[in-house]
Image (cartoon, rainbow, N blue to C red; front, side, top):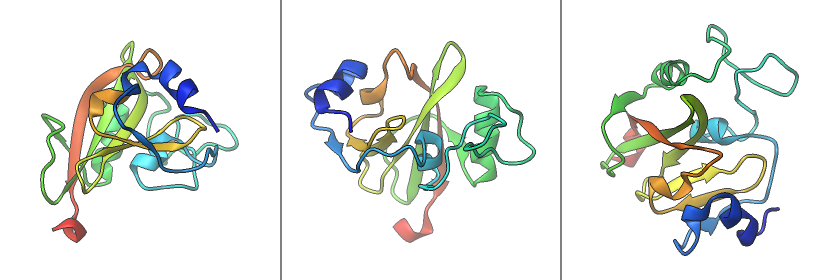
Length: 149
């Protein structure tokens, strides 16, 4: 499991923010799967053992491909990260035009991220996990959560 020093070395924006570690390290799932609430699969557009990618989607990590994937699961594009009662939001992070990370907003308004094959964390702001590896937030999507109303 990555130490807080290791996490903050990789993601410097987290330093001093009060983020919390919420799980043990695991390589059972990644940030994309975690954004969907799936803790059993590693979602990535690769045709290889150990990876999951839904049928009918291009094998690339373009923003358009990931937007379509989230839209299939009931999300629509939105303009910002502001907390909206009854909605779950997802932030898509890109580097050099390619998706590298996703985070989801919790019912509380905090954000949750799965850090590669390390642990899940909760953080206050969507920008807290912007870094050289993940890039920056490029797109927000949201969907109604009737169980949150």
